Image (cartoon, helix red, strand yellow):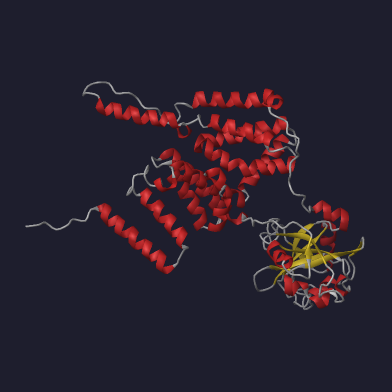
Length: 476
């Protein structure tokens, strides 16, 4: 008599994962491509498919590892974590090659000991790109030393030394073949190679610090960072100075019961850029919006101007940007220049009639008319062809304005939105990947992909942004 089929634990696990796959596809809880990657990672984590065969369709595990590292790097960069690294390099190194190169090499060498040289190189590419743009040093002077120090730093631990990992496997296989009673060979521990690896890294850093600056080729081209409209630019050209502050309207304030437009006309009023009454905080409040007790205003001006206005109008200056911090993040909003072209439907209208705040989400701070800067009575100013509007808005709203035929946007619009509020998730999943690499037996590609997908699921980086962060020419 035939015996019935016995379900093993692996079979049950496959059925559970298959059911989860169908559920994700049908419910559309997450996008199909995200669900597919999650299932692939789960299959690898539970050992249902051998780790060395999991990514065979992608040429090799190294391909997936590099892709995952680029996504991790983009997530860290998007939350500002890598900006801290680049700021530290600039703070230590200034603008001199002789100081910036050692600082960058120390950073990448230390990281390479935890996640291999290739991963560290991919992680630091955006960092050195930012350092190059701010210091004026050509990237080629920074990338070659960084690449070599990443390779040397990979020898600090066993994580980055593939030959020794392979040798460990050979030693274990040889030990199993030895007859009983024969002394077995010892495998290498995680930090057994550290003395040699640290010596190699220090030697590489010293070499590039002392001799490298004379031996590296000196390219003719300069750094090609796009000119940005900085705070000093608008201060020098338009007199728009100061910082952003939050004002809490108290019960005794004369601002209670008046509109935003009326508040802006008050003597000594700073620039009013944002408001929060009962709804979510937003930029570019319409001029007819009312101000009530408890309303929070986001204003821009010098400390003395804002302090005097707050004192005269019974408002409380908040100690920091508690309400509007994310809105005023430089990667999300800023000041720009918008030109009125010939044929624009706004020609002949006043700024008040055009309702730019309500329709487009932009606040006009000043108008440049044939070289003359107009800041008083801007709301009642009749628009003319060629007027340059100095405005404040989110970059998303400015992108919408750029598609309108009534405007010409003269400011470069940042393409990426920063998410500093997600920095905790980004650091956690990066640390999780590094921990899996160091303390578990999971393959490098699986460990890194776990962190990358964790960032996607927690909103650190969107899946389309993750695809865009991968340099496919580098990978393939």
